Image (cartoon, rainbow, N blue to C red; front, side, top):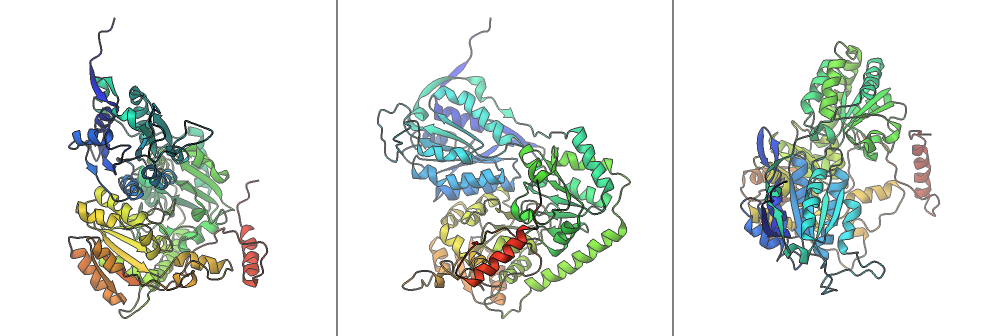
Length: 618
């Protein structure tokens, strides 16, 4: 017979926090806590339970206060991305609007396959005081709360209605956060009365636990089919996705490209796996792709996606390489089978290393490598032309601002962006020297992510300059975490491009035949156009700030910003219409089939021609 189990009486919140602090991983050879800390905005749904528990464990599990629940959750998402999913953060809010504010960020994490643990407060499990302040009441289902909004944007969801339930729920949530295939946000909706309820927990539940990194091997038959296809290919192409970086496989990718001559193109999430000047690096692919990469994709007979979910910007809405035999190397079978691809389900680092071994002695012909080199040289010339502007240039293009920013920061800097026209220009034009220098949230393309996300990036990479590039539209949606950066001493350099509206969607509106309407401020309903002083606003949040008028003034301001110890915002007015013409590809944006506008009818004809390029999966 077994002896009695040693227990300790704790509230469910105290036990949860103690358990979270005990989870360990190995990063760069050192054992560290998996959870770097907790972002918390307290309210009546979590301040008494989780708030008290976090205070007691504040040395082992730091707690940070933000100004907006969505913003703090973006910071947690960005931290996980910058840490390449090796570590994560926790986010807790009160019930009601505090919880639903985090749903957008949960969707960001879900789409981008990034680990975040959400602990939103919930209603009373005992229901005695119902309806409590901020409670959502369903007429048809008494078990529904606002936190049910998290269900479709969580990889794992549970509602904690009994204190002993965490003995099962916490390890299950952690298993999802650490699973390389199922990775994404986990939500434990924590009933506020249960947070304060006590239970006799087994002491061994709180013993430190080391969670290893799993690297699944590919199926032998799937892998051999890929080897055979590459050996027989006349014009193969590798497409590097975010999975290459999350697998820490950039060294294996470079070694394979150098050993075989295989050319590599990169998605938004995969950018930086190869340095921009690597001889086999063709640049970005797809709708925002380089001319070199897209020409190679158009000519390819075998394309191998590595750790990419084949988003429409990557495939040109399935029109960029319909002729190619497509393979998908991915840990997640859901992604590996997309677009009729032949799957190779396995870890990117394992597969790339095995490919180099199995392709030993095989090399892409010198003539094809020379063709690629010529295409790369022509593309680099186009990048130089797009990003260069005279010092006295006013209303510069986004590309010219990118050129000025890149010249002002060192190669170790991290650029952060998320939405609008800037991600497309950065994907084409930003030159990443090493992994982690390019941080774009372009899975969900969430406006407002930029400054909040940069906080998480700075926490993950405190020794690197973090440069935020953001449009005026995104800045106005969410800027409060600029004050948090000042409060926490996390210095950011924010470059705010003011094109006086939603310039990217305005261009898309015109491209689909629409009239300028409700995107630029000048085309929106107004009695008077607002004269927004972004620099004054940033200074009111505690940051340094200045407004500049020319590219020359921008360069000088960036020197001052990089030398400062405090977060700095540099504002410059830009042209809302100019964009880089070089590179790019068709994108499926449905145009009305009938319209009174001849411009729309013409755009519809062009749209129908584009749809005929799509990959046939019948």
